[in-house]
Image 1 (cartoon, rainbow, N blue to C red):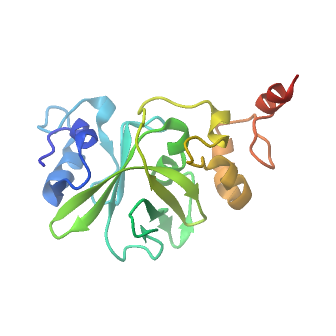
Image 2: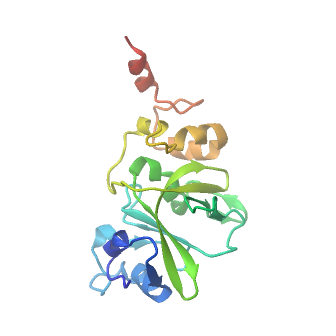
Image 3: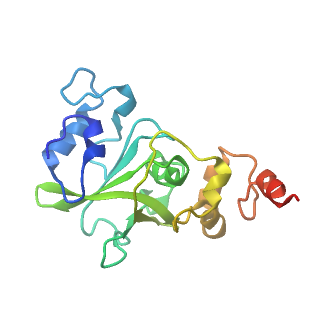
Length: 212
């Protein structure tokens, strides 16, 4: 499939093949007004085309995240099961250190709240194979677990407290981050002051839910 504007990315079906040249040019020139790949300021693709992760639109409420993976890029990267329903994707690190506030990592961390799709591509020669749309189901110190899913609503957000609960069997990551990764919790709390230090449960919501 030949991509002409960023919105074409959201029309891809699993198994579609895009040339590396086409995706590189789309990412590069989506930022250039009046180029053949320009789709408007709201869908410009951020980060450079050489990077493994890009995001469509401005964070935190992006329209989508693009992930391009190559075998052996990171030790943790790869499919988590034979059915290819879950993929482990490493955070961007500098000198072995992960900054959870870095935009590339924030685009992954914020996905459960803002519900934009993560578009996963795997390398195949001079092309990228589109594996489908994914969401973040868990977060670890060095990587996130991406779970195959649908029903996304790009550009909308869930209330902050709603990211604590499970819907359709998919675990939202905020509570897991409180238990496993205080660095991520600290980064998220910069945008939320009404969260419990221990379990990230919105106290107002808990009090009113338990009221008779």
